[in-house]
Length: 595
Image 1 (tube, rainbow, N blue to C red):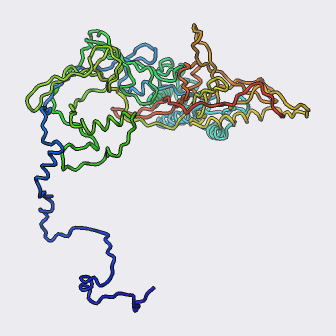
Image 2 (cartoon, rainbow, N blue to C red):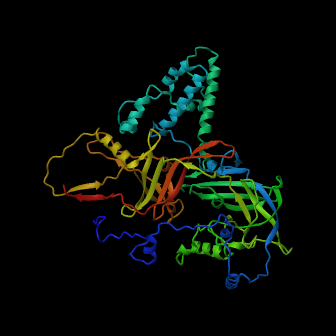
Image 3 (cartoon, rainbow, N blue to C red):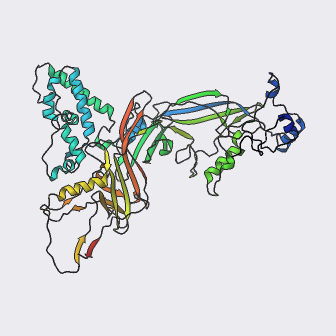
């Protein structure tokens, strides 16, 4: 490291002379470049003056800016629309009933009944405790908390004896701890509601301190029942659910009638979890002549369509650069990207918006649209499709219908839905080696009311039953192999076997069957293993085409949304997705195995 007196150090005496004559080798580095105005007047700097106007004109000529088109621009439009609101609803194959417009249509279609019992054992501990806690608050509010101990004795949680019939509690540590924590201390609110629905009163079997308390307790019971119905949206009756267990999807029908025609909207294969116009097919018929359609007329000034990243058609205008078409690399078969690029670069300034507001839950039929351009020419705009003809061509925003129509359905569905963690998840896979379909319960509802891993749950349950068996130790024998009739399969694998459809020789369906719990040294007969999820419990028969080669995945979870009136709605809904391919259970029969 040279010192200050080192001969190789260059210390110029006259800096100006050293720079002008370049007496010393230097390296110039810049870390910031900025303009240095010599005056306080910024008007000239902000004008961005162009000195060569001819160059600008040449560029405009090269890009076709001076090429005129014999076409006008839309400046005025008038529209007439007939609208009919849906008034009737039918879940699956049930009769039509009046549509409850206070609920989102998703809630009405997707809602399923909550399951509080499995294999004669109570589950859904979280909701049962929530209802019991609310009942205690009602009693406390009316200064009737002295009755709490009586309700605990009548409708409280009771931990039964430890045996094989109570395996769902004692086989799992978390379930047992939760049940022990509430046993004899808390009220099972659902049991109280069930008793009231069976014709009893909230004051039944209660020793009253004052006879006037009977009416108060019965009134509180009605409030508890109302609280349960308002917080958990469920079908009014068991047979009025839109869920089809044999199809693993929803089916629903809505109807809107007026004096001209009757429109029926059918959602036959709704399973993807977001309800919109494309979930329905439209069927039209003659009207009943009772309800007149609502007619809307209005005039507008059309405005050009704009979107983020849209290339500007004029020169010397800054763009937002949110979309860079030069960075899009579509393949030859990626039609969606190619159409987007072509629209943005070629036809972006040829489209206009005519804003119009309609009530949700209505079927809109555009009767007429007139447009006036800047030359004063009046045009009558008609749809590009020929209305009334039979066509299989696809068109955006149009329901599949025969014949073709130009109607638009504005579904009364929720804008945003919050989805909880899966309460149930079942994967239906094809097992070619075993020549059957398996329903693998990946997530099952625990007694606590949350979803748990089905594989761990099955292992714990089987281990619990093995502790009740006699540990038989076979004596030594000299055979080189032994015979095994059937291998074991995890208890969360539920088999489906092919059966013939009634009246058909070739068409088949998948029928749910059961594996048996056969344990060495067991002193009771082998028991059939039943499914732990409601998805498979309700699906005794499944259509064979619903289980694709890639498999089928069904998820059930709680859904929550806020509707137009500010009310919050919560329901249990299911959706179906594509699986991840085939699988193998390892099931084998008639094996010779080395000891």
